[in-house]
Image (cartoon, rainbow, N blue to C red):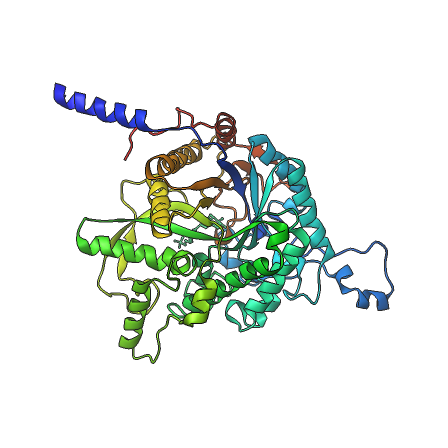
Length: 516
Ligand code: GBE
């Protein structure tokens, strides 16, 4: 290597390393997450009475014997076991329903400031509506919340992480005309019972993912085959329901409880394949059509779906000979009602995509063909056992900056971030993933002036990974799912996190030396 080149290299390294601040700002929060169906188990646990009651009393006090109701994932795993890679289910999962104190201990040992968990709607309201309230369910979450607070860990509660009560599914599900009523009533039960202690709420987890229950992916319940139609209808209904839960809080609870409410949106970070205008534009369309779909109605100044999305779907629908756009319209009332219904931005980030423009080549209408883009992974990226999840820590900074820029520097909480493997205890790749994602998160804070409230690791424990069953693991703690005791064992990543939180600084040994 010639001298000037060496000098340049030294300069580049020296500068970027020196410029990078690897210390967490004061007040930055660390947390870890789970979701009810993925960890709780006790899928059909029955309610209990203090003593056996005579029949007439049992009929009067139905809540006394209610137990947990069935939800759409229960129904799917039990009726279509082939949908799950290893033909397992969440019937027992990590058994957190019985082992929640152990889970809190794990959180405490790592030093997390908060725990993001979800409430199982059907455990609280077995039929989904408020006709029956399961006292055992209320007790369970009260116990969990109290155990967390006793250990100085803040609860961050997701109201809906994909487990719709089956009874509500039978009444039209997420697109049924009464869905918003049911969700508002459920939210009221949650605020009333837990809002004195829960100050961070997320209404829905990743609507952009669970809309797939209405596309041709056969194994996401309720498995309705209506791409480019059903997914848009679900999103529409979810945005309204989210806003109703938020407005309800404003009307009846906020002045007393003083909490924060948002929604957890998921996004891959798109980077253009080439610097052609077509690819740059395609990348923006991709971001608007996946993340902006939900974020624009809530966080933008003008509200409603992104213009590019409305225009594309309307044009395509017309070309297909339809009388109206497949993308439903809100109208002025709902645009105003939904706009501004979040106190911070909940963002799940895992991975990035290389995006390029393609002419409409897909033969069937879908939200993907509506975008005219192709997303793929760079062949140089390391891909995890989950095909969609590649090691792309730069996307953390890119996405945070994109959100901050598009939505007026709104404060962001990373509500999920994580790496999949097959369960190694010495999970050095997961440790590397977290350290470098956090490095780019700090770059977003220090170099791009993004307001980031905190980071959430998915997940504190291995859990039921939906259609992948137990074949893909995301935990900082290993669980042996063949052992009825479901023993938890800390992995290397748990140790790395513990040190990182204690020092409030990234460890040198897992930090990538090259900075994009
Ligand atoms: C989160 O979603 C979920 O909130 C959480 O419940 C889950 O455990 C965690 O991720 C880990 O997956 O045919 O393989 O390409 C991919 C993360 C579907 C974002 C999976 C939807 C990742 C978006 C289907 N993806 N998800 S395929």
